[in-house]
Length: 71
Image (cartoon, rainbow, N blue to C red):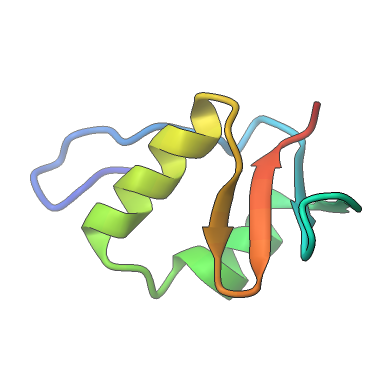
C-alpha cells in the first residue's frame, strides 16, 4: 500500500491478526476483513500510525476494537 506521495507504507497483510473488545479476550481477524471494515475509510495519517504501531507489535484501538499481530 502506498501513500499519496507514492511512498510504501508498513505492510501487515502477511501477519496473522487478532482483535479484542477488552484487551483480554482475542479473536482472529483476517487482513482483508480488517481492510474492508476499518482501514478503507481512515485518514492517511491515522492509517500510517495504525500500520506502524501494529507492525511494531503493539495493539492499536480503532473504533470498538483493539488490533494486534497475533502473539
